[in-house]
Length: 263
Image 1: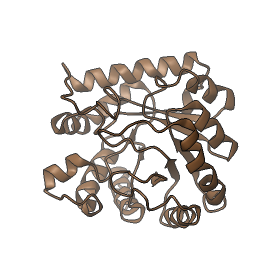
Image 2: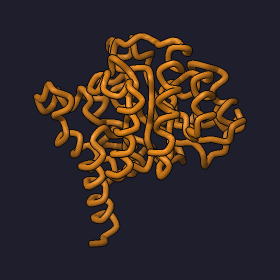
Image 3: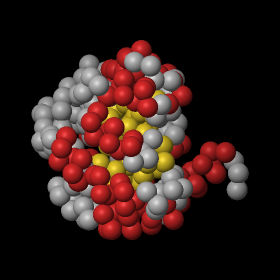
Image 4: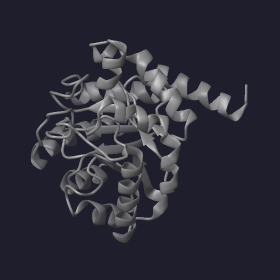
């Protein structure tokens, strides 16, 4: 899954793809580089970020979605939002997956909308909100608590009418977790398969990689990101969300070949 942020303030690519033509070029390149899905969002969710009103998200996204439609014809388009009005506009432009970091809790209309439109949804674990999530996050047992949350949200999604095969889950690396929490979730990622749904993992360029490797520039965290992508794929991840599609496609393909014992 390639990431395209239509925002002025995302942590590693803010401002680069606000222009529809620039976004379309980036999507086209990501698809050519091997992206199977493209995740587009208009609201930064970096630690400390504030919500962006629905209308502003729509204003940023609508011309971009119109521009990228042709470039993304070979990939699944995903909308990164917690707001039903934004998702509905995106679905009208050919998007078929809602990537909701609130797991349907922010807007009670989101899960019924997904069910009604017959599209997919990714339900992510987050402690608090982007504005508060890194204010001393604490767990009794992080893997068990994240797994239980995701299982509960899958039940809620099914109750709203979403078919199980349309649901992905995401442990929310970096969303209300310390570095130790992030590493424990990655270390024990395969335990999340107990929730019974495909797993999406997003580690690309994140702060914990920078703190561990000493790399302060998010765009220079490719090798640290590659290590997490390799580990995630080897330990049950079905989808990985990345900024640097071409090198991470190679990481995925090589890891999959080793896992399958196919040279």
